[in-house]
Picture 1 (cartoon, rainbow, N blue to C red):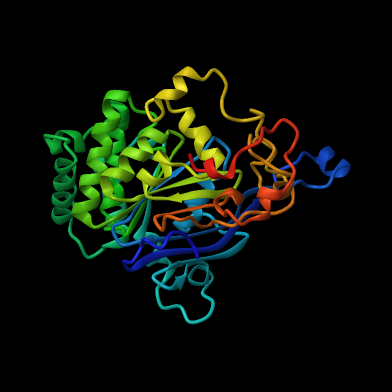
Picture 2: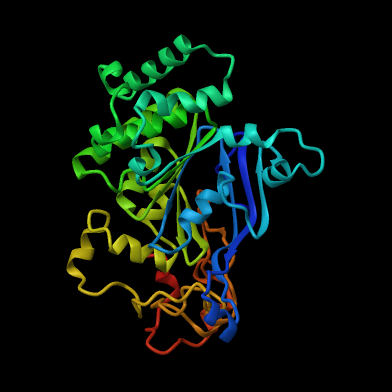
Length: 372
């Protein structure tokens, strides 16, 4: 299965066994002395995004979540696997291969992105109205100037930028960070997209503005029937969005999804040891974490994505790892709760994990308390 069985609505986007590998640029001397190294940013990920869906993708910096997000919306070509929009392979459409039912231009219009730094995505030398008119001129050339501007002003007002005409004639440097983010959101919504990737969209905002911005995203998501893929390193933000929208949280580690499901299941009763680490690191999710000095890991060092560990990639840090974890890769399979999947041998009471020898530094764990 690609993820949980809880998604019954029409699938907008489907990611099947996707991998994205990079070869970092090397200097001339380095290229002569060593073979190019491959960074396995994303490895074998499968996901479905349904109509009006909200998926919060969470993980440490460098885990591959931004690369996966860009791959989901067709901004990054996968090394392996497929990404389909309404049953149209995105890259077949891009390359004009086979029977293309949905042109690539239509796909790109339907899949939009809001960057972490909206100021960097706005032309500093152009007024807001000019920047927002550009995509409408490209995609709706039949629309006249009056109609374009009326639509832009209506959306600016809808996101709370009042009076809209005042904000429309400002330059980006005349806007606050939160206002710039709202302009970026308007630009995405102008395309009437099916899916919006919000990449750390609230991380740069003051704490007081984060909830306000997330509430706005949720309100607009319902109004415009748009699905959101929300990328964050902050588990609290991810939980808030997913819970309020009735969506899912996906936990990513070293290029792989290790747990996914309804936020109340994933965060209140985590099945993967890495999810427990993230929960520990978010004190307002786990009050008991305040009493713990050390994180629930054997090592704080994250392995190199150039040479990830064999078997379970988290076994080098996992406090519950056994020898079988070093060579047997766990699948992202359903747990006893159909609302969640976890890639951990411990979720199967009959797995050979329970008979395998403990790794050095791992304490004995009773199977009967594995999910406590």
